[in-house]
Length: 207
Image (cartoon, rainbow, N blue to C red; front, side, top):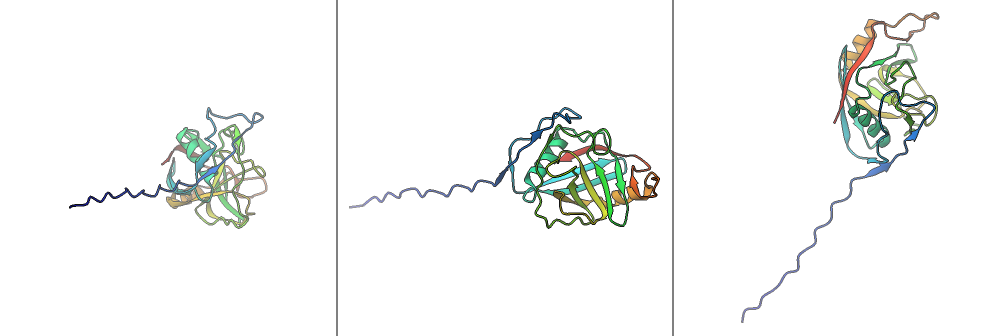
């Protein structure tokens, strides 16, 4: 007599959920959005990278943003880029001193004015360094991140209080051209002010 053996199906393990982080994007009615944009969602990916292409009138800068290091900051940057917030904007500040060499962008009206109408917390450990090619958020004090960011073209000997979102992978020669074009002379002779030839962001792609 033949016996039929019925094998119970083996349950496959459910795929692990992708890590996420919870962010709080706090409205700033005292500093309303310079361009129409809504805050990102509260729950964001905390793993993977975002490739960013910044197209300027000097050339292209390509960067990799690290979600694991700064999930809220990276999601915010990608969200603003996809919302066209940075399109046809200007980088208002360029520094080239013995302490600080950065290009500051992301403000719509002028340096440190014209953000997205909300703010969010810093994502720092206190061990941050800012080598050439680093991209980080600028701020006006703890927990005031918005749209302003800077790219280090040489080095930045600054306190580790600025959220690092990624690093340039291609296009540092674009930054070199910007620096070579010079800075508007300041009364004290300090190389910290507007670029002599305006630096315009034509568009930012994030994927």
